Length: 101
Image (tube, rainbow, N blue to C red; front, side, top):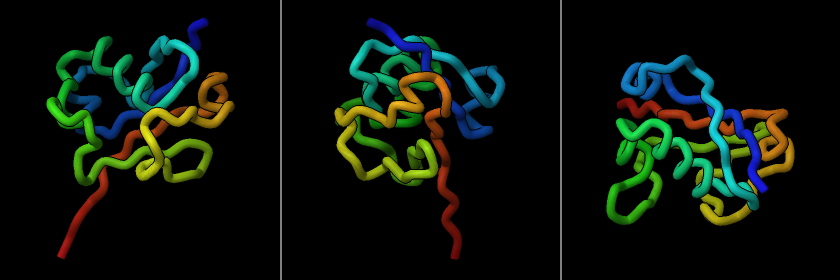
């Protein structure tokens, strides 16, 4: 079974992909972070390598994932996301962290 998942992108990736802040992607169940990101990269190939490394598929530094007010960045990429995200009620947020000094 597939699910329609809402994904919010940071502004720099929106510009790169030529999309608005929120995109919809179709994801196979179980809906995991990895499957969401694979769907985003499949639909928007210009984003390949911007969120996760091309080779290791590990989240890039300064990129964070949030859902339902929870930081998912350090959870397993293969763990199911909250039901509100897989049900299309809440978006899966991809944020670019800001570093400063």
